[in-house]
Image (cartoon, rainbow, N blue to C red; front, top):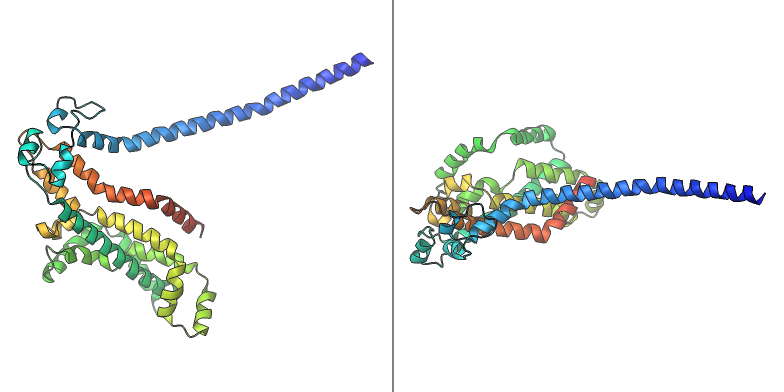
Length: 318
């Protein structure tokens, strides 16, 4: 009898052990899947960041030495000369010695112009687009939906098609080669910004507005005291996206702001590229200027990137 019980116990123990083994295998598979996922993410991150590293490697190299080791992963003949040429602190003799362009750009003037254009565009577009979106979302007036539909059709028009009419308008207003002429076409609103804000306003409860109207508040007071404070999330997101877009704009500032006093940083980099020395393009200087021009946008995403992702996720949940 004891032998039978012992045998039974051993069988149960073996079954439990084999069952435990079967349950542990999926855990190993999950670990392998997770490792593969992290490996794929790491490879994607390397592929994404490698161009930026190559720009930094080129900017930290001597322009003359670049042609001697074009495939080197490390800076060739390490030098800060490219950044000095872009910032205007290098003498023509020092620039020529490194094979860089001897021409100079007024970096700080162009940086100031870019900041003014991007900031003015962002403030104006967020403010007026929010007001237009509120009118489309909360006010009732004849033909509202038809006008909004026509307004949205502008999203299907390529931006290049409106460049010539805008240029003629700015020229007739006498605003060529001014920062005002660069900002004006983007200052008031864009179809995307209006659509983006309208979708959020539609999700706000009307009971809040009705309570404010009972207290005697008008539309302007409701908009500035209630709707805008409740919409800080989409306002921040739209402002950041608008600022980044305005900062990287190239073609329109090139058409309108060709004078030195109204030239923005992206256009100035093109001018710097055209100042080609006899030995070949100043790739080190061009990469240094591109990195410096992209630095403000990089800092914005570094500081507010987490908040932007949370805001986009929150807007998606709404």
